[in-house]
Amino acid sequence: MAAVTDRGPAPRQNNQGWEIQPNDFIRNYLPDQHPNVVYLLYEIRWSRGTIWRNWCSNNSTQHAEVNFLENCFKALPRASCSITWFLSTTPCGRCSRRILEFLRAHPNVTLEIRAAKLFKHLDMRNRQGLRNLAMHGVIIRIMNLADYSYCWKTFVARQSGEDVCWPQRFASYVFLNWIELHHILSGLPPLL
Image 1 (cartoon, rainbow, N blue to C red):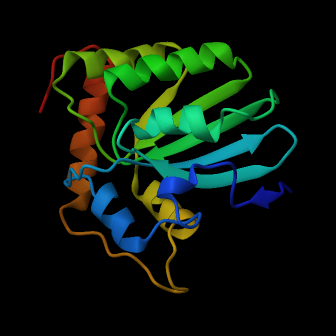
Image 2 (cartoon, one colour; image 1 turned 135 degrees about the horizontal axis):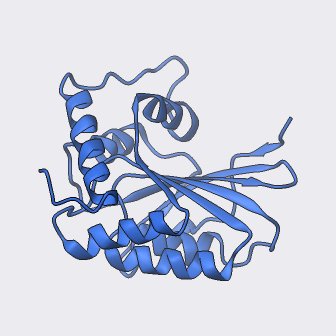
């Protein structure tokens, strides 16, 4: 059985505890909302069996993905690990390039990205960035209901027994983001 530590190195300037507040999760992860803050919930599974969980977000100088790469993973050992990100939006084209640079420098790391929604999906740089990530082995997918439930139970500072009730339109937005991501990764023109 893996040892779990619910914290790992994380930038504390935007992280008061290791769990995010329920309203922040709902506001930022609903697929029809587009707030200015991008959240990145992460889980690092180390080859020796431990699991680190935490989160970060964008700040005035860095997108959430770069914040993670430069501040959360910077001084970590060279041991093999797999990282899962639960992002409130997919990475932009520039962040996709930074992620690829990071993965080239850390061949012992695998990355899976699960995103609540697409970020500016009509921008060709963002579309190409996602395709480049996928071509280099990064698994990218839109979060499904099981992912939302997992994040709610694992990363949100909720009261015991407190459940989230997603709006009725929730499933259709998830589906629309999923189908558009499929178009992006297949090199097809925008559907939406």
